[in-house]
Every structure is written in structure tokens, then in C-alpha cells.
Length: 185
Picture 1: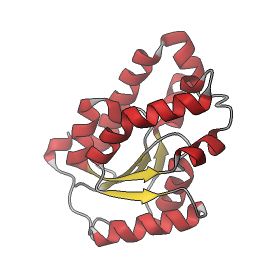
Picture 2 (picture 1 turned 135 degrees about the vertical axis):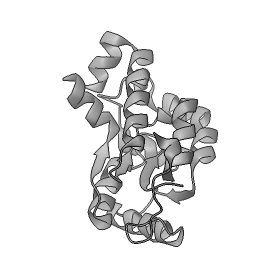
Picture 3 (picture 1 turned 180 degrees about the vertical axis):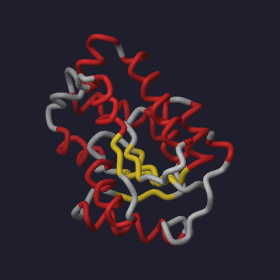
Picture 4 (picture 1 turned 90 degrees about the vertical axis):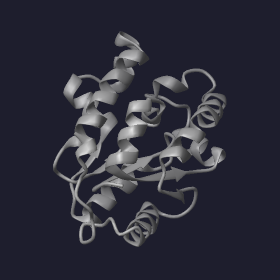
């Protein structure tokens, strides 16, 4: 495990909101990788999917995540739901970060993402696609996770505090972190 704290999980699990709170709580910069990709590209993730395709987006995502994990500044990162599909990203996560899988019941995910507007992978039947994506990604989320936190119920601040306490128990908080390993560069 490394100095970075990374949140993984499905869209609607609360990674961005919980991550913002955790960043403040841990006194670390917070970065949402989907938002960062959109800022750097000057376009939305949905537009990137439409114009460049998912494969192009995933290459950009992988490069960004690996670069951030290799960086010297310990961060709280909220990764896009599909980032764990890349074996290189999974390897880097295991080597360079403490990873928290924010898991939520499928019905909760569905209620949070609604029709899926602005989420390119949810075109059509959002509930069915969410269910299929969750089933396909679950093993990868569990594979990289040091800790799993159920984000189905409770305010984001409560979930963030739960994550922070579990992180402390692992000895990886700002006060008790280990140096970022060379394997991350």
C-alpha cells in the first residue's frame, strides 16, 4: 500500500462527494479523474465517448491515473468506475495506494444515477446497464480493494468518516503513511 488514497466503485457509489470530504479531512489534495480528464481535454466525458470512443477515453484515463499514482504528492483520488478494467491501473493501485471500494446496492446506484443522462455508458436502459457493468467489474473492485465500505446508506460525511477511520486502522493516514514506493514511478 502507498500514500495515495483511492476510491473505486460504480458510478453513483459516491466516490466524488466522499472523496472531496476525505481530502479535507486528510488534508490532502482531492482529484476526481473523470473531471480532470474533461478539464484537460476541454470537453465532457460524454462528448469524449461520442467523438473519440471508449477505448480512447480508457487510454487517457489509464495514463492519467498511473501518472497521478507516480506523483510525489499524496492525494485522495476518485477514479472513474471503469478505471479498474485496465490491468496496469490495477497493478499500480495495488503498489501505490490504499484502495477503498465504495460499494452500493444496485437499487441505490440506480436511484442516484437516474436516467443516466450525461453518463455515456448508461444509454438506453440505465438500470440494466448498471447491473451488467457492476457484475462485470465487481471482481476487479474487490481485487484492488484494501477496504470495502458500503455507501448505500448514510450521508457522504458519515461514509467519509467511516473510510477515514478504516484508513487510520491500516496506518496510512497523513500522520502514519509510508513513503510512495519506487514501483509507482
